[in-house]
Image 1 (cartoon, rainbow, N blue to C red):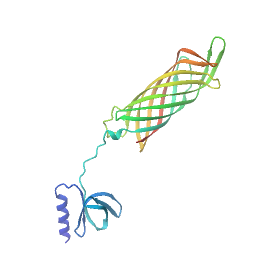
Image 2: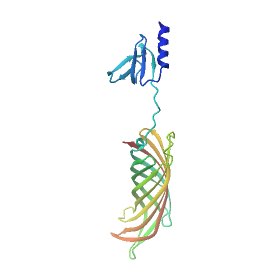
Image 3: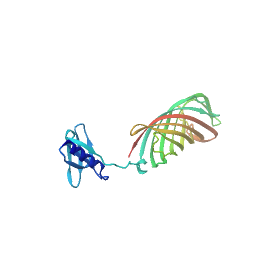
Image 4: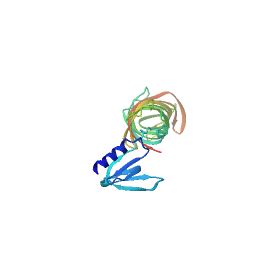
Length: 257
């Protein structure tokens, strides 16, 4: 009897490729369908439309399971389009002929949408709560003001490009980025502010941590040109006032949709 059951199992296993899983019971019965799930004690077999109700089968009553050979599922391009939100901290050093700021930390928040597996567009806001260095003076020809401490903020748009998006087996995703920001440099407790525009570029890498969370590590260079100033309630033009920022950023990105 045992030999007959083994021969039956072997015949089923060597039969022409089937379109369903097969469960061969110790009493000789054969159930066919799709295995939807398994536990330590039983499995759930579905076989619509022949058997509309899923069937629980005890593992202790099963002699063997012949599983359908399924082709490996490849991620589609559509699956790699998603929205994301991010938060990050950065450490920056500065270079300027006008300012001599010490290194400073900053915070940033943003959102983006992966419009294509190779490209992502989004917006962000960055705050640097404290900047300090040697005093900086401004005059309108009658009044002179000296500033020693500042805070800065900027926001705008950016784009990321993933040149290796076809390498699906890579765990990390390197990228290049560029962007445009509107910038403000504000002397603390003065009511004044310098206004400018920034161009930025850099490179980074996205690393899966705990889905849907990803580490976002990047290095960026940002060049800001300040072209106007609010001074004593009025507005004036500036010329040749620039600031370069070099930043290393560590953040988390949450993907959804």
